[in-house]
Length: 256
Image (cartoon, rainbow, N blue to C red; front, side, top):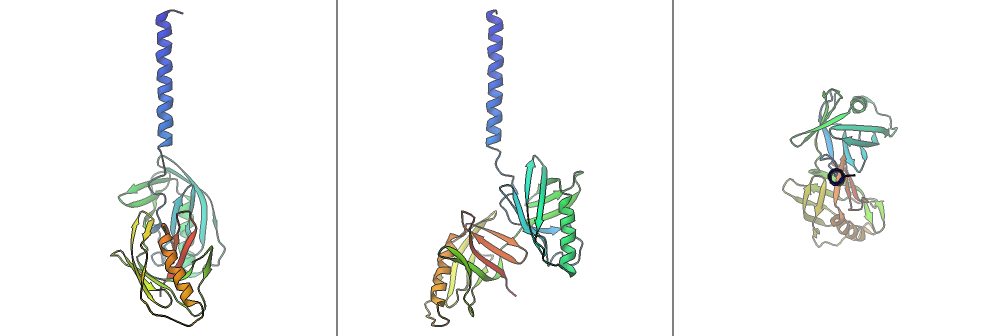
């Protein structure tokens, strides 16, 4: 082999290795799609009566999609390649859904099954059919509003509230969280960013309550749990605060 020929082979090999290195770097830096780890709620695309009141919601995270179909909850898997989106095997709970909720759920699941593409339109997520036809449009779900706690982390387990006690939370648009911790009122600052959540240590009033038994201990455990929240999901009328490891910090239902 001549030196000229050998030099050409070395140059070609260098180009191939460089291309492989660039490809690996691209794969490693691909990261999650821009719509992942954000709680979404359907804002348009459903014609069934009650679509606004029973709006389905979903979150895409680490290959799993889950949320509320309008009545039942669902969970499935998803993959993306470029602007394609494949949602497979959504398993739906089996609660009987009648009236508007049932109609909303049926239409939503039918359209979800037809989704093959996605695109971002500003801050909204558009789920589309293979020909690009818009099927569902989603906006970021908000935790702003009034909520009533149904459970929260107490030591090493999530447990419901003591009988005859009530814990509330109002997430304000001004970044303040306030409510009743069961006896005292509490307040704290909070910030959100694309589904992430930070809650400052709450400040409490100083009233003492003797009844029901254990209410003060429950109150202390609740306010200690809140700063552990790192993200949130909104599924229909349910709000869940999650720790950084994905475990539940607290669950709420919409007040009223």
